[in-house]
Length: 415
Ligand SMILES: Cc1cc2nc3c(=O)[nH]c(=O)nc-3n(C[C@H](O)[C@H](O)[C@H](O)COP(=O)(O)OP(=O)(O)OC[C@H]3O[C@@H](n4cnc5c(N)ncnc54)[C@H](O)[C@@H]3O)c2cc1C
Image (cartoon, rainbow, N blue to C red; front, side):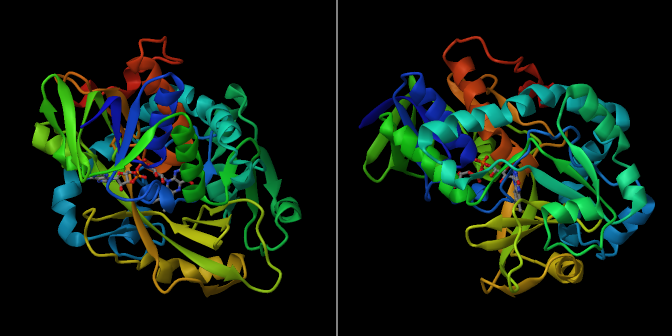
């Protein structure tokens, strides 16, 4: 039987970063996954480490947008009709959290985590020798309409107050940075401080290799076998049981698979998202990720090709893929950038693990001694993985946490 101080369940960017932070503090750590490191949601994201984020994604406030979504004409969102009754309470809570006052509150409560996103990645990138995957040239948000650019005024004002670097550009100046973009947009904001990666899977694997170099062990096992074997937590693997004093659930969208049998009900939902790689036509190239704000998709240069990622799809996590958003957005994407042939036969599907107030849970699980939870990072799991790893490792080892962890506790949903 293997014994560890801590077992971290889930080897996505969040679990791997936690395991690495714990190993750096001298703990014996087992990182458990039923698949390969980084092959879950963390495989397929847009690769933006966006320490610049101020406001979360919001529930649409305009009836026009809602109607477009309802009629399944919106490129940025899709839903399965049969899933709506199930997700309705979550959507109501998400909508309530999208009021201007609640958004301002979220921005304040999330800032300490976002402020640490880049420095914490920089530290791990350095230690893991993962430089080759990292770009430090920011990312670009494009606006086709004057009105949508004007809608960013509050965000830019807050960014100025908080000292978050950005440069508003006209189309010509943006095209000086990215000459392959067509001038179909009128404005852009260059968030200059953000990082991005050319291969999110390789980055997570590099962090896992660093964890292994520090003596950490990665084990193939099904985390759903987790149970208490007093006084420890136990998981079964093919090589026998693994026991640990503490267990951290970092299963991304699969966290409820473990929480529900333990009687822990938390309002997790998923915003599914797709990606597909395209060959750029001719000599076209991108040097950083781009968000086409008015259409609602991203283009990111990856080792595999230009990765096009979609917005949110509200559907059951395990329902069959329905990549209909591609049909709605491809004309706009091809108009903006000369995309050639797709490089895979079918799009990849992932599921962003989300909580309705757009804050993750990074906390001890109430009433379960030695059990911790880190999940619900939504649109920002890549960004916040290492900062989450540091925070929870500090909490677990009794060190002073770098920020107040209260906004990320689980009890806010357990009154
Ligand atoms: C299209 C798209 C674009 C995105 N773009 C960005 C971006 O640009 N920037 C950003 O910061 N974030 C982005 N995100 C969000 C980000 O990818 C996620 O928040 C993040 O990957 C979640 O990481 P995680 O470690 O919590 O989950 P995961 O990466 O899903 O890891 C969970 C792990 O648990 C394992 N697991 C599940 N069940 C079991 C079990 N029973 N037993 C053992 N192991 C199990 C899985 O195999 C998996 O490896 C994007 C997401 C999508 C879908």
